[in-house]
Length: 374
Ligand code: SAM
Ligand code: SF4
Ligand code: SF4
Figure 1 (cartoon, rainbow, N blue to C red):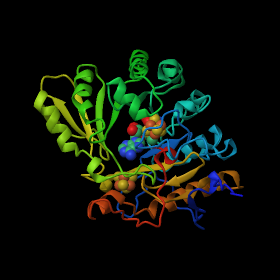
Figure 2: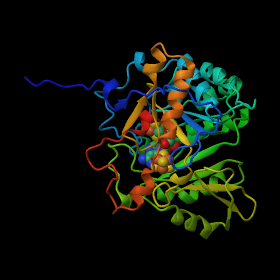
Figure 3: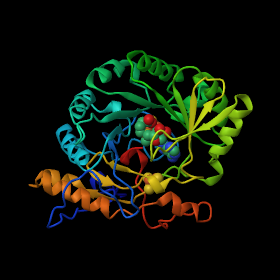
């Protein structure tokens, strides 16, 4: 008899119980990690499920009907997410991005957005709240998201050619429905819209120019992302990465571009403007030009584990604190302690190694992007 072992989703990744310092430091919003990086951006994964199976993120051979997604009881409730968000904001977070998995699959997400939209920074400013989505449900939900207080959206779209797009999402989803979602989002004012295109050499790089042409003069900011070695299942290879520099070169052959400054410190994209005034594009060179030195992002997984880097293999179990009898002051102090000890800079370390080797070695399992949130 063969016995099938289904891993307990809750125990899939190692996690640590956070340390609660005996003495609390004053909460100033000015935390700094071991590399002098502040805490400003919190990405919250609201579900580990998705209706797409993009090969670079949730390959269908792994994320199939036998895959153990998290049970409902593991997910942080909206109240738990909002409580944590409030404590993170006290510690310096100014921007919250909802992600996943596909965040629009989380039931009543608008209610969470309303709750988060009521939070303010210590100086009384509203938070910058955004969401990253594959846009499959955006046409239906854009208005209610806007009404709930969402300011803008980032849409993932890997090509305009319907056959290429269907192959990349691997669930035969038509590109026309995503384009319609973008249009509706623009109409209801979820702007400025950003589009993320993950470029995989030999798979969708022929879509770079058509995408650039389509979004010129629309107010939409198109950003090209280098295919990254996140997770442990996508079979990443360096030769499938198209360096951003080549993306810029290809676009410049058709339209003149000039470099422009970052909007703010810690911005992941390098910006370029069309010389004829048709708008701007961005490139995110996570592989060829690591930007760890000003990475101010923390990630909260669907089940409440805090990750300090996209490539981490271990999280800090904040849910245990939430569901235990811990006061806000204790959880805030634990967050401060974790951030102050942070030294992660995976992409910089990887860049210094030979191609296709990992700074973590082979023994440590990196978390999947769909679990931790992009
Ligand atoms: N489902 C939503 C979506 O696709 O927009 C949100 C979650 S998804 C994990 C967040 C972002 O991560 C997307 O823009 C996606 O393209 C990007 N992403 C996923 N896997 C990636 C990889 N291997 N390399 C680069 N970007 C990746
Ligand atoms: Fe789903 Fe987004 Fe991952 Fe694609 S990138 S599989 S849409 S979570
Ligand atoms: Fe930040 Fe880690 Fe990415 Fe470096 S590798 S930019 S530390 S998430």
